[in-house]
Amino acid sequence: MSLLEGSSTIDVGLIGCGKRALWYGALFGNIDQNVYARLDPGAYHHMTYYMHVDLQVDRVKGIRLAKVYDRDPESARILASAFKRKVEVCENLAEVSQGVDVVFIASDSGDGRNHAALAQPGLTAGIPTFVDRPLASTVLDARAMVSLARRKGVPLLSCSHLRLLPRAARFKARFAEVGPLDQGYIQGSGSNPAHLADGIELALFLFGDEFNQRAHAVQSMGTAPLEVILLSFARPTSDRSLHVCINNRQTTAGSPVFWAKAVS
Image (cartoon, rainbow, N blue to C red; front, top):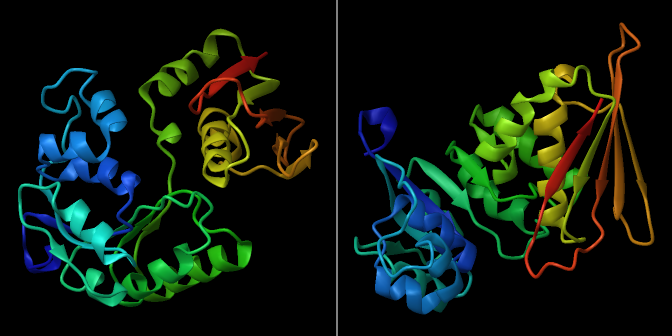
């Protein structure tokens, strides 16, 4: 039964059954701790705060993993085995959006090259769809996805967790202490398209509110594509402007590390 028919539970159809799917699934599924630890030891230890106890994250209430699909059936079966509640393993892409309330696309590729194709069946069926960042690998694909969602009148969301971090919100809340900002700086973490999207999302969250979340100019420079991005914000009716530099040069840290600075 769907939400439109009065169900109190949101059923999720999950596309892509790599490690990222396991991370997301742990938030809305009753996961088997032992299976999770075996499939992805690093993430398991992180999400248990490095102790062999229940996950130290708040599960989303009223939502459950109902179906999974991956072009590799074995990957889908392995992922499904990590959940205590039975999860249906779909044989094809179209099945995963049938009888669910939300389609969730979890991508390990990091470049979004197949997101348009993965999202198409669910959007066509009128199912709200979340797409892992980046939304797509080309502007053409992104526009096609947005156009389809608008035609069907269905929600489509692609978002980075860096837009939702409590620490970022606390940092942003202190901007008033230094007055109107002139410059912002984001230290990104390499050239992976997903990490590029993370840095842009963080920049827009921290600095974009007074400019309706839209930069009026974007510049790219460096020895590699998008190695350094300059976002310029301006108000058309005043001389108010703000420039934000996103440095995506690979850091020496072993995992993605982001930080930000605001200058008045």
